[in-house]
Image (cartoon, rainbow, N blue to C red; front, side):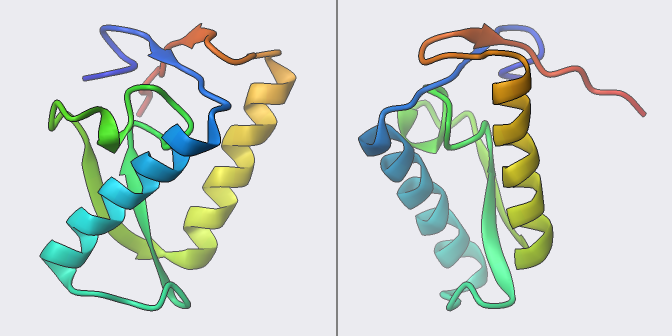
Length: 99
């Protein structure tokens, strides 16, 4: 799993982030049908803010509709953690999965 056995790399490149979001949204639309993003958002892993996101093209990602409020809160938390841990563009990081 990206980020657990191999690092993820943060990207500040808006074009990469947009492409990652677009690829994930395409998957969500194909699986669950289009939605307006009001109540549900398409959430993806690896994060759109990484080089390993859905647009990488290796098919090694997941995307699912989740509650918009939860998705936006998680995104804010992620960005806060980038700042708190001084992760800059291109910096590697791992994800620790804990029960």
